[in-house]
Length: 408
Image (cartoon, rainbow, N blue to C red; front, side, top):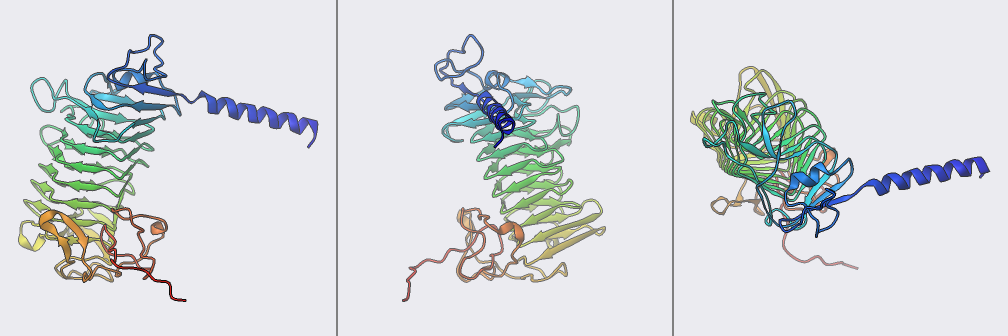
């Protein structure tokens, strides 16, 4: 290597070293002393509310949060009305030390109760990653922009932001029927949610568990949520919004779509949708309140209740093209190929066990898709069975009991 090339190489390496070294960790603890320099770079001088440490962070920093209930601090979303217990605007990692059972971010009701002026959602995630928290008691405003202000009582997820390993429960959105996504709302784009539980959230409007105006959900459980208008569990309504390997159960809608509302250009793969209820069409899934086309592959839709009863599990708007392949539901409908019309034989719905039994017609009868390579089911097992090489239908792979012997 020439002297000139060597010098350039050394400069580049030094610059990389400087960039790496600029990333810092900031600490949050209810027992911290709030460092006078405002950097919170150790546990002794830790910030006592999360927003202080977030404000001290720059891109690529980490905010590490110890055990406790964090219900103070916060910030209003710039240019909007909504208050947030935690507002993240930079590309940082905000994570707990010991997981969601021990680390809680708590929003607040409006002074008059419920949603309105003075309410606070739990987290606004404009960028970066949120990992390992319980988000609860979040409320939105009742005026302003319908996503930024009236959406996501638990968490607002901007394009490119990521949420994982969180429990999102007991949050509320909207007012006057105009709320969107009580547990979470995705802005249009590439936001993701992985390995989360969304339960007991309430939308005065649409999407009791989550409203997706884009983004992807993977390996999540959406259960026991409520929406007054449509989509008790999930409203999938945005450019290329997708859910995969998700369990959607026991959600309730005051209108259509007890479990899921799926709109044009959206898709669901390898999901189980069961025991949901709607006051009108589509107790399990309602395809297309608006005109368009959407897709569901490798899904189970079973044991849902809708009105009229012919729409218990699936209802399709007359102006919508629903495509369902290699899926299981009770009533024969000409929606695609490889479908099964019969009982999926869950282990025990009375104990909320929606895994498959050995005799299930959904075992080894799905269709393999490219995204499944290396993917895991909702229990963390390989998505494609290594013996048959064929994926099961629904959110869970059936795991055989017994011993494996090597025959010489």
